[in-house]
Length: 128
Image (cartoon, rainbow, N blue to C red; front, side, top):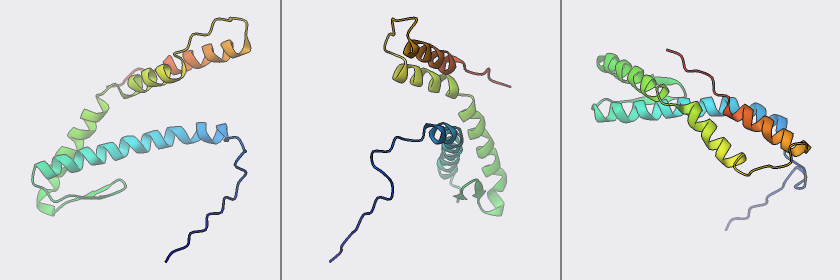
């Protein structure tokens, strides 16, 4: 009844573009935080009995419940960003990519490994 034809327009042996991957990570990470905030807001609005609709970064409710939604939205933003998100990301990445011990200090791979470890461990201080 149905026929699917899949065509791959790139070389399957081509290596990933690491520059594109590096550049894509920060905005995608921020987008995931934004979507987490939206989900937390929607869950708490639901628990409070509010009608809640959202698209991307726009949140809607009935005019009568806007003040309640705004309060919930702010509370969830503060709650989310009070978590040690970057420290947990750093810990995860260090465990995932830097858990094997490199022993040859003069080796180029070791120097890259050490540089990666220092970079991943460098977490900015949190603000107020």
